[in-house]
Figure 1 (cartoon, rainbow, N blue to C red):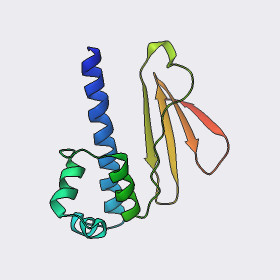
Figure 2: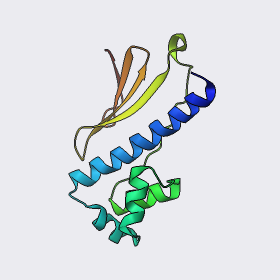
Figure 3: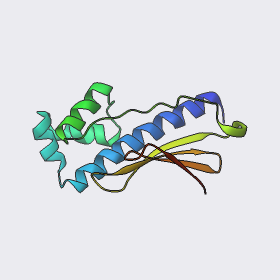
Length: 126
């Protein structure tokens, strides 16, 4: 895969993950696209376009969506050593319920979980 293809894949993957997380939160909170549009003061079409990925989402609009959904926006960028053995890393927040979630970083075949409610990191081999 070329660098341009990798960049495009990373972009589409980020858009997909963010919009899917927003849709899951909306479903959990039983908030429709129309409800969200009303809270944002935007049209339902705008909300649908952003959540489908066809309209560009900025950090500002992400913050607005999160505020309307009464959640704290978080952006986590990997800081630290390079991935092991040249393996790509993957980051995902795994939502357990509204109060508790785990962050998971996958490097190669290893997964590292962080529980936000504990100071320690747990390592598990998948």
